[in-house]
Image (cartoon, rainbow, N blue to C red; front, side, top):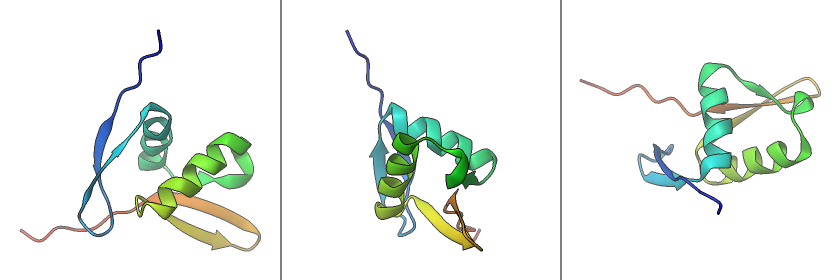
Length: 77
């Protein structure tokens, strides 16, 4: 039996998206530090790209390296 857990995260446009357990693993890693695509597996790069297309990750290039980060938006009090 396979258990798949979903987690709710906020996107760039303040909408809530559900992400699965594989996406959650990358999301948690990206919250700690940026993810370097050259150090990721092909599967993880594909998942990170999907999260980028869902507006959950930001994608940055520095030279020939690509990094993924969690979109952070400062909220006004």
